[in-house]
Length: 73
Image 1 (cartoon, rainbow, N blue to C red):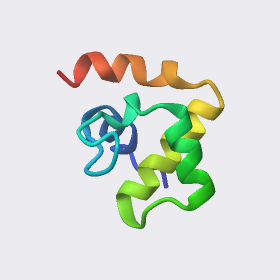
Image 2 (cartoon, helix red, strand yellow):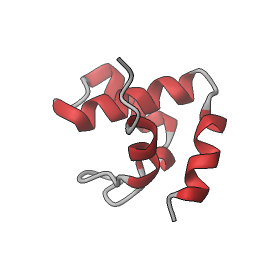
Image 3 (cartoon, rainbow, N blue to C red):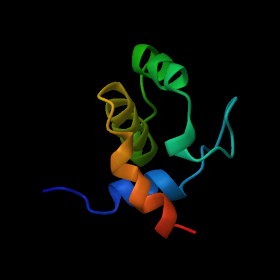
Image 4 (cartoon, rainbow, N blue to C red):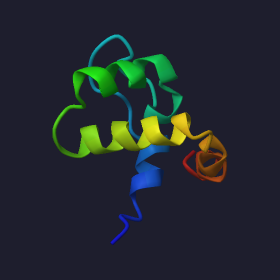
């Protein structure tokens, strides 16, 4: 079953630590997500969100988040 809050969390949640602390997950650079992919994503929901964002960027699907970015304000 698909978690319907997954995509909205990507445009609302901010990175809680590290070099890109306070950056919206949807705005993290692809290189940072590739680094996580090679080192391992953190456990829990944050890791799942980062992995999802990695897959979205890897496959050129960022346009799926565009309508959600406008509604998250």
